[in-house]
Amino acid sequence: MSRAGTEATRGRIDKRRSILDAAFTVFAREGYAQACVKTIAAEAGVAKPTVYNHLNDKATLFQQAITAAADSAHAAGAAVMAQLSDTGDLHDTAIHLLRLHATPESIALRRLLYSELPRYPELLDTADYTNRIQHSLADRFARMSLSGHLRAEEPDLAAEQFLALLTGPWDTRSRLGTRTVPDIQTREIAKAAVATFLTAYGTGHSLK
Image (cartoon, one colour):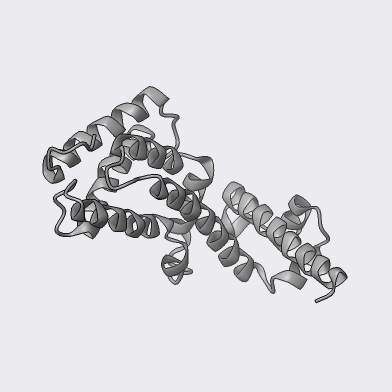
């Protein structure tokens, strides 16, 4: 492909990304029913026909915007997982996962996903980033079990329970993301979650 062709392709990809980011912002602010393509186009700084050139209709735009946001959230979670070695610091991982759970983007993503599931049940397969993070965490726990630092015969269950110990208390204290949880409380939640988890799955080695 020529340089001009490459730049044109990159420009189209960048514009599509800009439209999806704008769409997510508008859907999160106004909800699916109230959001309109005209507003999304204005948010993205493009003409309304440009939105339709990239994405056929409002329904497609919504699904693609949600999926793109979920991909970003999963990438952030995967980056946290990548830092967790076989003898890593679970407390540090817990804090980072909670902070990811608490971002405005993550909160908005969960709200949109849950509110529109009856309309778009297939989004569970593409946009449930928490499930994807759980699988990544299960993989790390499996490695830690092999190295003797965890006692997790069922890594998927261990990962599910670890995340529940983190997100459950945070969701309660934040009233499902409607109130700010001070960082000191985030750290307290993480500390308690790790302590409870290691009581069940720890082996007494260097994990903390």
